[in-house]
Image 1 (cartoon, rainbow, N blue to C red):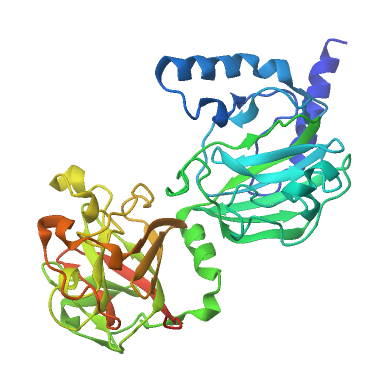
Image 2 (image 1 turned 60 degrees about the vertical axis):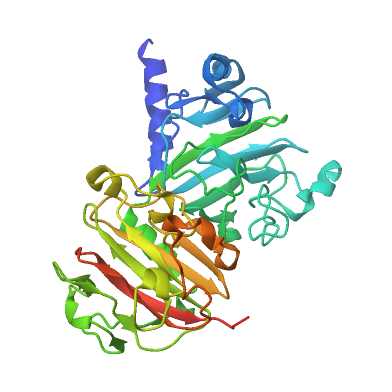
Length: 431
């Protein structure tokens, strides 16, 4: 008879494993809360030092008092810290089921940030917050921003099992609730600092918010860089037209002899450089491309380049293309020299590149005097260059091209074998 509990546990684990989609890893073993701990990011957001450490310890100790596992389900009465994965995740696809009590309110935190909203759309006291629109949206986004409200009402009645599927690449989030898409590739804002991008990695949190809720079939699939690039490039791909054919420099001008085409990519020849450009003047536009950097690699994107001179000064700007390890190899940089920065003028956020030798996906949008850079799904620069105080720029250099309203798009070679591929362009209405 002593074997019975073990056999029952084994059977439960087998059932849980059977419900995990191919390629996914279960985050819940069906028996206990191994791999999870108690954490509420709001409780420590303003704490530091010993006070923060004490609060983190307290939440871990209290976790088992509020959360339990039984019969293949995770249960919480609506109290205590959030159930939080021990492991941090970058890009991923997450699937789970939840069953919440009537008039309940909960959510799924992504990389420790709020949240894919879960609530009862019939709860009249929350109509003022928009609950009648349904669950499955990024409720903590700013009003009017994409993803704030669900695209459709897809909830099953409270007390029934609902299924969530979440795909997160960079800060881009897509959500399906009960098979209906509620969020389509929306940028999830950083609730803790609206001006900063989300963290590149963080835990999954199951929120408690006053109502009993059960969870089951919680599973995740981590998304590698190559697939993430494909997902980012696929969105609105029909709006972008290739400007590099992957074979030769047809349609390009400038010192193209200093570059070569290797395996479908433009690469700067060793010891060479210069500024090749797509031979059509542009006003407002968006460009997508992939780039791969060697260690300490350096190049750039010329924005509204006049066809001669130094893109860093004679173009509207040069956007840095720089390896994350550059400082480690070659020395300290000004923040306005980091990857994605409008060189010497406005610094970009860092920490979002893929490992050296992997392909990165980048989209640049130029409208009037504004420029936005999205790297691997994270917005790392969003600036109006008309507001730059030239008296305070790096080296107090003059930027005669800053006010250009049209020019060429190209590269700003720096003798390193930096590679570019899948370069495509979308013309935008000029403002």
